[in-house]
Amino acid sequence: MAISRRSSMLLVMALVLGTVSLATAASGVATFYTQYTPSACYGNRNMGNMVAAANDRLYNNGAVCGRCYAVKCAGAAAGGGGGNPCTGASVTVKMVDNCASSDGCTSTIDLSREAFAKIANLDAGVIRITYNPTGCP
Image (cartoon, rainbow, N blue to C red; front, top):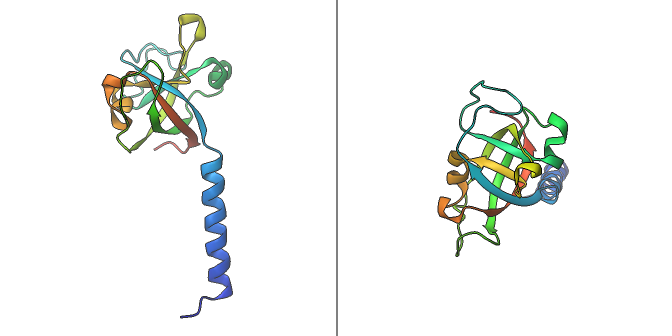
């Protein structure tokens, strides 16, 4: 069975785009929180429970508000529970708050409890993550 030149080009493009996507994933640390309002971005407006707070750098004076990120557990982090806490799933969250270093935040992304539970065992408390900007559902 012969593969046409066009099919070959499409396959190569798909492989390149997939590799670029993986290469652009940022890495960091995630924790979780349970009180979603008020938030720095939306005040007392309820934005659901698949939400997160960004550290100061990612928050960028509110520029990240309303943007969505695909987050995946990459393993246990120092200070977390032992073993592999990851479920293998990924989760899409909307950035609604600031996890300010002045408030003691040491994570890159502070996930809602529900979002954290989709990607890792809650007992871990803190995990290593990869994350990418993505469209909001």
